[in-house]
Image 1: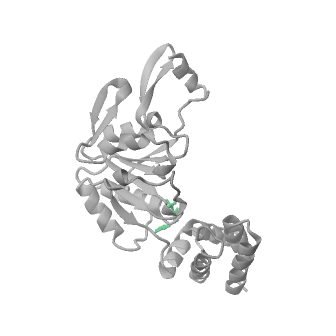
Image 2: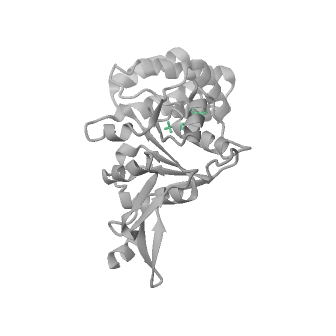
Image 3: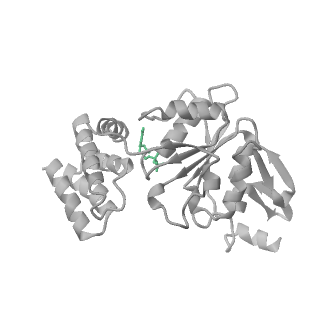
Length: 290
Ligand code: ADP
């Protein structure tokens, strides 16, 4: 217990998770522009309580999509109560997700972790980049993501039956794949999978214009820049530019930075340190913003 008490003060072994609990307002879902049939698929999966894996590169709209869906579905009968999002990282353990005992003012308190809170209260739990977390987290999500819908809370000797509105959603970026950071087949086969990619130019322009407030022409130029930079991917670039970075470029432009300069700082320099790749992106930037 002394150790657990120390954890409160941020000593080694302290809780490694930060999560976000969002209240849901079905009348005001965050803006999301559908790219394919992902809205229908996710809706059907939620109604059937099938766990969902969102697969795709970083910054292409997965998080925004889950937020949009959670708000929208909250308007349905037996819809989710909240959205609980956990950004997974290499120090995140099973206890961080499930919960732990803490000593506070001479009392021993059990504190539910975000996964337990979601399973008890009927939230959608979004574990972003699950493969980054410690291996013991996988063991936990298995009984929650099949017909059992159970969460074993070993420290309390409790076997929690998930609330009927609970749903588990995880995301995974196959671009970062390595042997250690692969999603195991036994995990993947418990989820339906929605694949995300960067939106086509027209749709990405619409998103950039909406999110950054730049005019439509500039948004189209930025979307075209995105498409062309992504074509350079084989030539030394590890990953294409995210929609997020193109929106940042738009925001800089909206705040008075010249377009070419905005593209350089938001896109070129953010993507690479390699002189050759930088030069290649610079060429594309100059061609689009002469
Ligand atoms: P990911 O979770 O895939 O890393 P995000 O959902 O955070 O990416 O997307 C980054 C940003 O891109 C969002 O905040 C949003 O502004 C924008 N975005 C991307 N795709 C869409 C879309 N289809 N509709 C609306 N906004 C989008």
